[in-house]
Length: 401
Image 1 (cartoon, helix red, strand yellow):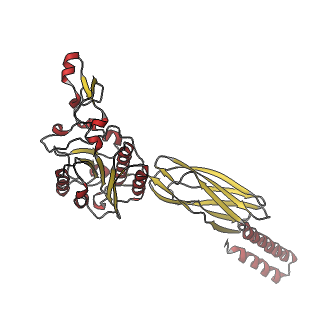
Image 2 (image 1 turned 90 degrees about the vertical axis):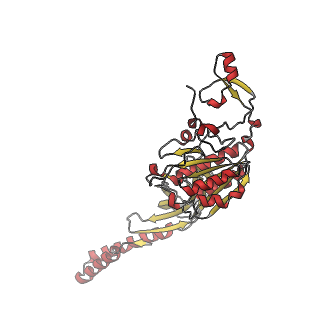
């Protein structure tokens, strides 16, 4: 119960003046003031009694970029009407402010609906209403917490990455063109006319010479060696190498890329695993299926870049999980000799290694070394760049114009 100190002082002053002067008018004014205060007190005292609420939300989980809705109903079990009720939802959802002001008739109810645009991944609470009742004069107010607390998990955004392709082979060599091979194998099922976006290594020169048109090889996905490979996604959440803040950070870019790659390969039927080390270690062994994807996305919704384990140590610790049947995708803002050594160890086990290198300098961090070399396939991601374009493997090799 909140009240103003003046509500006590003013009536006492009126009473003192009435007693000192013997004024009947002042005594009546004092009686009126006491009556108004008493009625105002009873207004707010009874106003919060017999109130309950029900909150229905459209989903238990949603994703950054999606919308979810709530339907909130406040009930009164009292025979007395309740006026000027303010209900505010107690939530930590960023940018979400749900407030309603209404009256309740005897045994009545009030219902309203809201819609929220999911802005940031995480685990949030909602549904708990704080009801405030104040008298018409603003003398008193009283609050009551209608605890109907619920939780919602907001998954990170996932992007379509149709042209991100793991390699079918990953061999050391003097240059990128020596080993940047197509994901879909070496045995062509058919040939067709060249289309924009086809790579040079798919050109079928014999058919080109016969037809006078540029012809390319087309492959069946089920004949691909790489199509049967397992995919490991390794996400660097080591705190010391991160840069930027909020959505404009290497942390958020890395999580979005990891989520997008996991969805891409789970949807394609691959066995996919996730390795990361934030405030706690995260390890999801190779599995398939939508439930496995949901579990990994939930972990990515909660993970924070507070890890104390550098990604090179993470790779060395888990190196036994990588084999010739695995493609290892490392997402990191780090670039140092120790990391390169760990990546070479992984590659020595026959596992193709792909690096998604987050350029720390473009996120406001200090400049680091470069992982771009003839030994690894590297995608460099800079702040503000469109991720589906930056992760397009066709940009890594010359195109026919």
